[in-house]
Amino acid sequence: MSKRMVLWFTVVSLALLMSVGPVLAVETISTKDAVKYVGKTVTVAGAVASALCTNEKGKSSYINLDRPYPDDPFVVRIAGEDCNKMDQAIFKKGTKINVTGEVNLTEKTKKPYIVVNDPAQIKVQK
Image (cartoon, rainbow, N blue to C red; front, side):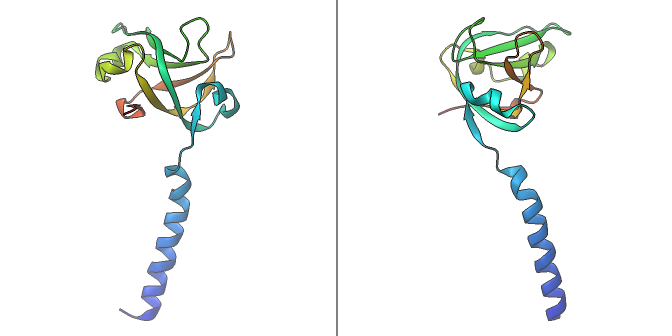
């Protein structure tokens, strides 16, 4: 392989790594700081304070982190039909979890939340 080809592959590889690198690095934040990250993809760390898991289509399951509803600083929303796909440990009070996704605000209360569609978005802390 010529030096020119090696150089070309090196430059392309570095460019790809630089463009993918920021996507792979997701900041971990607390529930109280989540409101500062609306519209950004982050990992929120907190303890389950209360939870509701429903399997009804069209309904949402909820996990309230750090304090129970209605005083919870952060909410995890899961579509009802996706509840059974999740590790059921995430619904147990006191379980410490990390939730990754885009932070949104509820319309009514302006409370931060992440919508979870994939079990890989929630990890139980060890």
